[in-house]
Amino acid sequence: MSVVFHSLRWRLQLWHGAILLLAVLAFCLTAYRLAWASQLRHIDKSIGQNEWTMFHGLMVACRPDGVDKGSVPPELIVERLRAGTLAVPPTIAARFGGNEPGYLYFAIYDRDGRRLLHSENLPADSTLPQPEQDTGELYRLVGTRRETMHGGPGGLVVVSGRDITAERESLHRFAWSLGALGLAVWSLGLLGGWWLAGRAIKPIATISRTATRIAAGNLSERINVQGTDSELDQLGRVLNDTFNRLHETLEQQKRFTADASHELRTPITILLSETQRILKRERTPAEYEEAIRTCHDTAARMRRLVEALLLLARQEASGAAPRESCDLATILRETIAQLAPLAKERGIEVRAELAPTRCQGDPASLAILASNLVANAIQHHSTGGHVEVSCAHAAHGVTFSVRDDGPGIPAEDLPHIFRRFYRVDKARAGSSGHTGLGLSIAKAIVDNHGGTISVSSPVGHGTRFTVELPTSGSR
Image 1 (tube, rainbow, N blue to C red):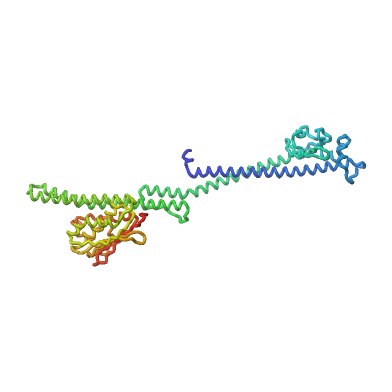
Image 2 (cartoon, rainbow, N blue to C red):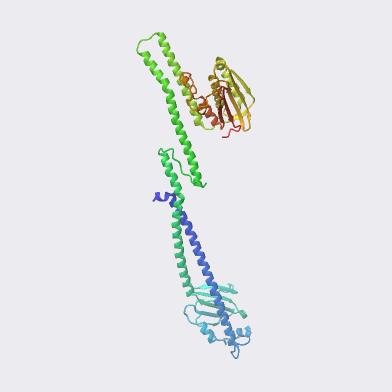
């Protein structure tokens, strides 16, 4: 049972049923009260008309000849009532008599509460209000009767009443009919609510099943978005974006593992084959020295590769870099100074046009970015030549570029230049000592800063890397 009430559909149905029940009850009670009020107005009007008929009969009885002509002073009626000489006329007695359902009755009292005249069927429990109560005009229910009281001429109090058994029975039948109608409406509302709740949560069930299949390993599947821009469509798009990032991250990790395994396999093979070769028989000191140097160089290459892999992993996993105000020109100037021995060794002249360029970023990451780009330009340049480094403010941030006048990059290699372990010079891939991760690390740093990096390389006119970074550091 607890599982049932944990269901969103059941909870929606319970809330819907409760609210609908309150609405139906409120409607039925309001309709009942309005019908009862209308019935009472009709009854009071009828009592008033019969009361007028009763007074008219008394006026006729007060005329000497009993003829229904002319008017009789009210004082005469009051005087005869007080004297006890006015009896109920036969026409009035016939109208106000009997005890069948709907019978009429009346009574006339003086101001002291003494009954002066009444119909023979006056109920025993029909009394005047207490003296402190207002006797100007009063309507009340007494059992199955409706009574009216109001003041008459000469301080008299007139009580008129009517049996309302028939009206009450009619109202009870109306109440049962109203209750049956309300129950039918509530039942239909529950069925409609169950159907609507099912339609409402159907997309959620679809999303849940799709997410379950994705969690089970089908990472290429996505939630079908209807394109209605509803809340569920928005949720579907958010989840699809999340699944896309998750899929991309997992694929990235797979590629990272495969690439790292591939790159580490060669140096490990060299180490194993070299140690096995040297241990097969006794060697001269020179041969041992040569083997140890080979193992050292191979281990150094493995260390550079591992450090580059760790740096790339940190950059890709860290997300947005911590930001602080820094001068891009200062970072580039320090980078050029650090790489000056490498440039001198290869006969490369590094030229700099560095204007003060403030930006928001992580100085350590920007230093790695600059070092990778400048070192890449120096190392992939033929002996001699120039490398130009510049930075400046741009329309929407800051920009810096690294340009060399070397042989350039073939057009077919440009789309892959930022891939891990991608090398333009395939022939030197195993002997150059490069990890093939420098540009991948550079792109990861730029992405973390919310910027862009691009490369252009007209064949025979060198290579130019351009980095644009937002000044605010916003992604």
